[in-house]
Image (cartoon, rainbow, N blue to C red; front, side):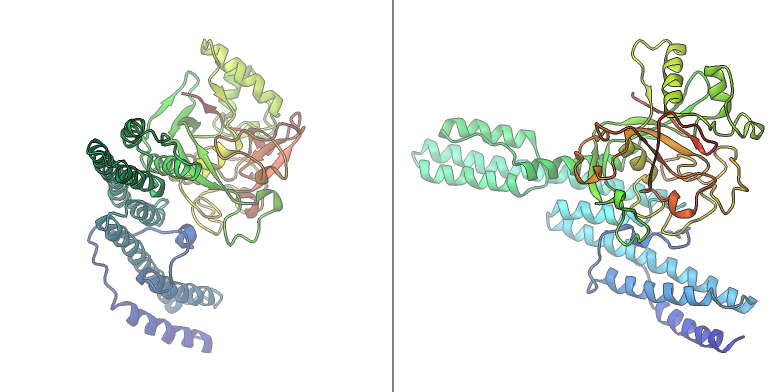
Length: 473
């Protein structure tokens, strides 16, 4: 063993001994089967003074140590140390998730339901792309729903109490105090992240009696309440799927809200991936489970244009232009006797939302490339491969990174992120190029990041360019 290996060995043993004193008290926590970076950058900033913050600092010490050890010449002894270090890192991550969840419980018990929801969403984000965590995630989903339902009921009861008091004071002839009571009810609604129609209705009935203005949720309050609803719905993916007449499988994607574009700390981002911005997908839709295959294209169009036709019917179709795809869509709708065509390309926002599947990191599995999820330049052998051979994302979609670039519906505008709308954006109104997403078998790892954008002329056909379909319910 080299001198450096001996140093890292004793440093590791010291850290392992210290970490061994930590025990998670939340018995619901189970082993996390993590990826290379374990996804710790997925949550918003954690206070260094909190228990989770202290654990995160310890985790980063391990992370630095692990990176140094992996530069050393591999020996059996070093392999054991590396494996032990990874296991301890997983234990620390469990502790962080558990600590954040308990913080949510504390907020809930203090009737701070909005903060509780944020904590539960953060706790869930540590587990959203990890196998073996379904029961924990299900428990967090229940807490999120309960916090929302309880928070809405709590707000309604408070507002009604002040409204009833206002009406009673008015009957007693005390209009000044009646208006003060009604104003308190208004303030409660303004401060809350929830927008409760029944509370607003009760307030407005009293406002007519007292001859004051009706309540209209201010923009910030309405947006906060609506976004909270969207994020809650995001955690309740129904898992519905269906297969169409030519064997295409579709997965239902829930309505939800996410941060689109360059994630914090990603130094590979191009300017057209900035700024990161909140996007709301207000309606559920269906997304192709796989990229459209050569066999499916041939079933509709009658011939196979693919350069890699010898790959087989279950390989992605490529060498198809954006214009070709529009013709394919129309013929597929006609084949299925649709009076109104429901198949389409996803918007760029829908594509990234589906690819991320709840993650807030560079790739939907972590912050470093992992060839078990994607066919790209380092492992593809310079060709396409059968769809669905790599690991799926958290929502069951395959090959969202690599294999072939995927056309989306939007026109390309390098500055679009600085001026687009937050609700269901559909891309630039002007521009001749169309957007491609996801990277391909030819791409280096950075082009396979969830936020990476590229563009092509709509008539171009290339052996690395294909697509997947979306479908309106």
